[in-house]
Image (tube, rainbow, N blue to C red):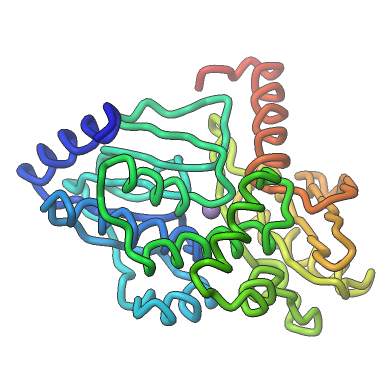
Amino acid sequence: MSERTQALYALCREAAKAGRIVITGHDGADVDSAASCVLMQRLLAAWDIPSQILLFAPDRQAQRVMARFSVDAARLTGETDAGDSLILLDHHQAAHPGSVLACIDHHPTDNPPAYPYLQLGDSGACAVMVLHLMEEAGVYLTQEDKRLAITALYLDTIALKSAKISGEEAAWGEREAKRLGLDEGWLRREGMGLMDVTRPAHELAMMGRKVYRFGDRRVLSSYVQTDAMTQERLCAVLDVLREEMKKEQAARWIYLVHDPVRMRSTEYDLMPDGDVHVMAYGYLASRGKDVMPRVEREMMKEMRSEGKAGE
Ligand SMILES: [Mn+2]
């Protein structure tokens, strides 16, 4: 066992004596969040430490894909209690009651939170980080564990094409998928996840919705993957987002349109005055790695210039 897995083991063992350990992903849990939770629970089970997974509003893809791994994502939903010890996976900003015991995430930040155990990595999927952690802890990995992590890797990186995954990891993912006998055609289709843009504008506007807190500011973000976005549909989406922004009292809403066919992304930043700032990427940009860290810096700068730093 490595030093850090030993530290994690000791923390979890103590916390289990004091109460319930809850493993969670981010709100609107995607496949990577759900898969990370399942693998984390297997690591704790190997350590004989009881835990419970609680997912918050798992998305449709998570429900569909996890069912292939005999996991009913809808049945894992619930709410945490203030007395719970939380293990945050695939996100690092706590959004539910309980005290954070540990956090494993692949979304970089200039302002890492102070948790007893914090592991921020740069893998394309958080589930891959948890898989490697199991390995580090000397836990026997089943084919199913590996399949779950590789599936999460494909689905969290637009089928290994997003800028958030290194060439090296993408090549490894592809090799592993073959070795594990995974259906690559299916992985690619699910990973590209092309959205039908004739769906209601509200649905297009809310895909992958996430809330970020930068100081005292709330920033919301959502995205869609499609090769068929039109000006008319985009305007309808932005209208929905302007309304939602008011409801959410958001300082900004970052909307991304990923086109996995043409390998490019466009970012639409909605400002409080209704303005839209547009940024084009000649590649599939990563919200977690390219976009939000930059927005975080912009928001912090904005707050500092308004004399609100440190709040
Ligand atoms: Mn993820």
